[in-house]
Image (cartoon, rainbow, N blue to C red; front, side):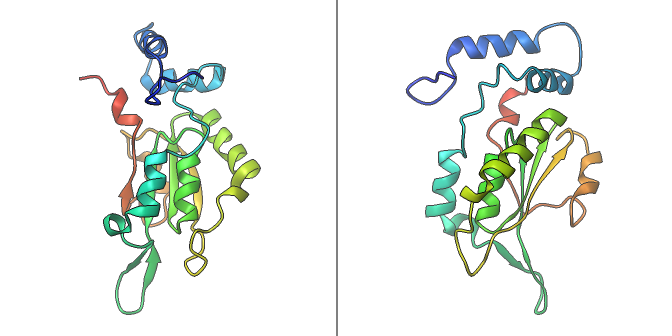
Length: 174
């Protein structure tokens, strides 16, 4: 996929996405699933984790702290991170490499399949960044971010310490 010098999709990609979502009446989840099922137009896929997230995790620990939460004197647990609209799961795998138990959420079964393929093929590139903390878990779930039924599949009842999104909210219509 071609990108502009600032890394955003070219305007023809935006136009094509707009036409796709303005088409015949069906749910937005079906529209996303249709794009994943066809697999020939995924302009948001940059082939790796978001560079801004890499910088945040590498250089701004003051903003996020470490990957653990001390619940009480006896219980220490990994922080949980949710990445709605996780695409192929690059950012989920990155969070796990930094010690978070990370969850990727997608509306499409095909997208989750692609996440699992990415994890199997390239998961070794996401080794633990801090050996003393180790890696967290990476999990992928089918569900609609704007519904709550998917959260029953989450350890801890669907509560997250961090939600990272740079795609889902950009596609909301006012």
